[in-house]
Image 1 (cartoon, rainbow, N blue to C red):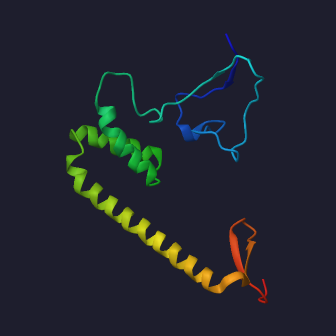
Image 2 (image 1 turned 180 degrees about the horizontal axis):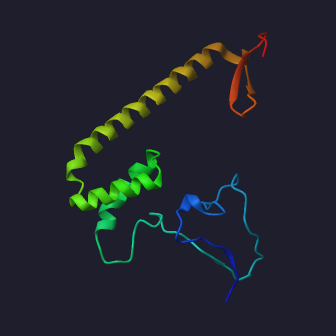
Length: 152
């Protein structure tokens, strides 16, 4: 049997693996293995829902997957997400949460649009300043603008 070059502990979340996996190739993501043309090998994969879909013939997993995905995008820890999903299952569904989820989506959309508008205004301001702007990096790697002639 071919050698396993990349393994995943299926009992742990995608984000809690010893070697953080990724969902696509990107030049900035360091490789974890090298193979020669024609060489046989195996890699372990995790499905898109990161273990939320179980092989138990229940439709509850599919029903709750969107809720879990939204909570993950919101930055909630996995333990909190598991608690919320269990409470939804105990209640028999998420219908009671629908108004709160819709309000949350509206707030996230409003926040995202405000951030885009702020970025556009910043871009217009930077264009107004013209080529006298130079970009420097802060100690933490974040960009810092410096106007020509001003002390850094």
